[in-house]
Length: 132
Image (cartoon, rainbow, N blue to C red; front, side, top):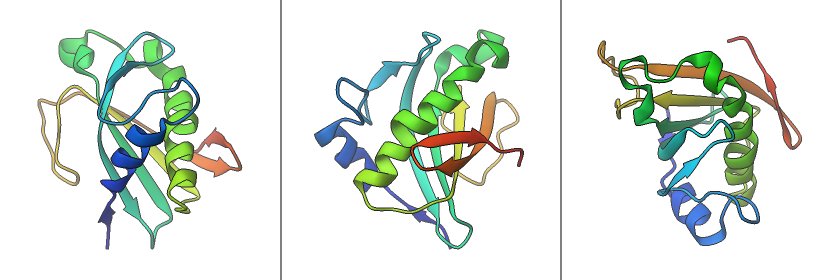
């Protein structure tokens, strides 16, 4: 069974993810300059997975390619994902980060949507790329 974690948004807005870092429900720039907004968090406790899903409208129509934003995934995993899990005392050994040009309900398909997805193994305060 999966659980949606809307509490993460409130917690991050209240505290920020790091000193001077981005908060949920606001648009912020990743290190590559891509503007993103956290729009969904899904925790799958039985699978040990936390999913952080971001809107990135610049992906639409191939405006941004994966190689241009590849380094952002680690940053989003560590600066937002791990910080949110720790702030809310949630445990998930794997974190999956999604960038999408439009909101796609979790588990549904949208053939017109552009989505980049990357998975990580959480090791302390670090995210290590995990081929999933």
